[in-house]
Image (cartoon, rainbow, N blue to C red; front, side, top):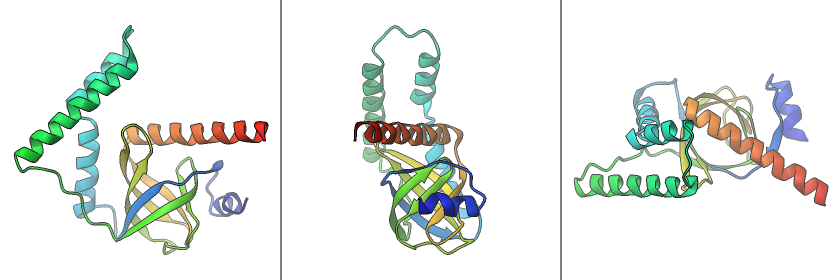
Length: 180
């Protein structure tokens, strides 16, 4: 696999799996400024009061239906979003200059089919994971080549969810190879 070899040459030791994820990116000089403010804001929104309560509830012996609990939490978030819209305080995301799609991913790394990055460049990005609901993960990337970027900054909660997604993609790939 070409991406795996390239990652190892760049000093990135990980497994690589196929996955098409949408990523919005903007090249930045450094971590900071308005992109960092959005990064903090998006991480804070994801850790809202209801999210903290949900983590606490799941940490205990919860006897209820977890799917129902997740649905209720999402309804609560939608109500909060509607309240913000009505109050004209809707959060606006920064305009990022490129929308690209991964062809492969690994723990801490994104690989793109197209050569869209500038080697050594630092990028602010929003990674969209196909969860219910779609999860927006702000992160900073460093391009190790025109096609490979290492995730250099991502919130702890998002890192865990991203790594879980990578593992799930690996499982699906293993199952497909066994069946095929």
